[in-house]
Amino acid sequence: MKTFEELYYEVLFRTLKEKDSSFLEKLELYDTHHLDCLLHPEKHPLILHTGECSCDEPDCVKVCPFHAIHPGESGEPVIDEDMCAGCSICIQECRAKNLTASKDVIPALRAIRSHKDLVYALVAPAFHGQFSSEVTPGKLRSALKKIGFDGMIEVSLFADILTLKEALEFDKNIKTEEDYQLTSCCCPMWIGMIRKIYKELVPHVPPAVSPMIASGRAVKALHPNALTVFIGPCLAKKAEAREKDIADAVDYVLTFQEIQDIFHVMEINPSETEESEKDHSSRAGRIYAHTGGVSEAVIATLERLKPDREIKVHTRKADGVQACRRLIQDILSGDTKANFFEGMGCVGGCVGGPKVLIPHEEGRVNVEQYGNDAPFETPIDNPYVIELLHRLGLDTVESLLEKSDIFTRDLSNR
Picture 1 (cartoon, rainbow, N blue to C red):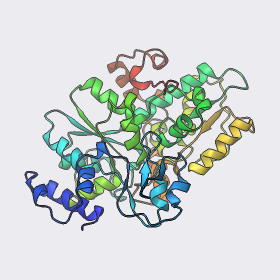
Picture 2 (tube, helix red, strand yellow):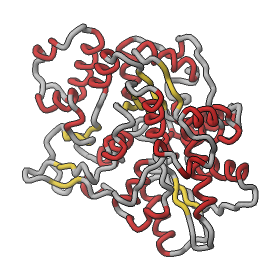
Picture 3 (cartoon, one colour):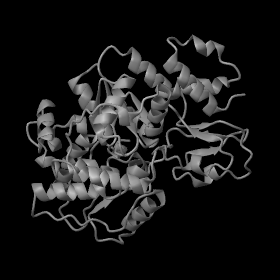
Picture 4 (cartoon, rainbow, N blue to C red):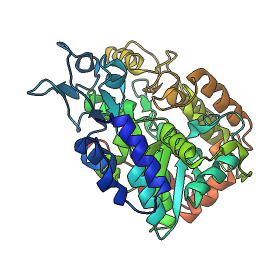
């Protein structure tokens, strides 16, 4: 019997190399459940069980911070899809290596190739340097076009817009010493932890979607028939894209590893493709990808908008699930004087996500350098932000607080 990974690579290879899907009928020695997981991932949990569980006390059950996994009647792990945030900790801790992440490559490729309208790749801010140090954003854009994308959009442009929104929300809502704001909207694990476990803290989270959702919604507002595919380092983004109130934004989520698999099978070397550079984001949006980046971005932006306003950022670094928990305990116990808190679910931030291709320390250096190379320091200095807001019907920056359905999410009713 073929393993799940062997089946995945065989189906991926044939999907890219053969003209039709008749090969599926000829596959031998495969598990029909595994094949269905590859062809129809939306029908299955983000965490897949691919082998027999022989653990008396499964580590995956003990380590899940969301209590989303438990033994079934026959002993195999069962995933609670409503509670699972896609943090991948259970996969890392499974001693038998029988848990794996859902893969969306096959249906995404089919959709890309059959779609009659525009197809956009929405690339996370953590992308810089992931596909080798020689792969510039322009070369990555050209490589993605070889797959079938019509264009690539850097999600950091929408991180710029969400930075503006969070800065304005801070100025509007933080009035007393007892008030405080929780960020970051870009991390579904952090938001999921608050929403699923620490619900009493939801009122302190700004009503903002993530940059991923903002980019998908904006593309569909401007091009209603477009297909949107987010590309990033995070399995949790697959969970976020499935949430009912925001499922209108992104059609598919692929990880850096999944894109690397496609490049490998198609024999595409991104470092050898032509340059197609288009700088649109500011430093603020680009540094979202590493720990502390969101706080730094909001501080710099608020200083430009309201120079007299002071943000007191909590000094403890909260990256990784355990660090986020400790931060929340500090907040709940009142053991802090800060009024702005940032949490990131992965050590190092997004550059430390479970599906990155390089060490998070290297990813941080790359992201920081890319931020330093940005032509604009903050979103308010970025003419592309202002132009995009106008195209979306927002006449002023302040409109982000008043009538920005594209960029707004109400977590209180969830």
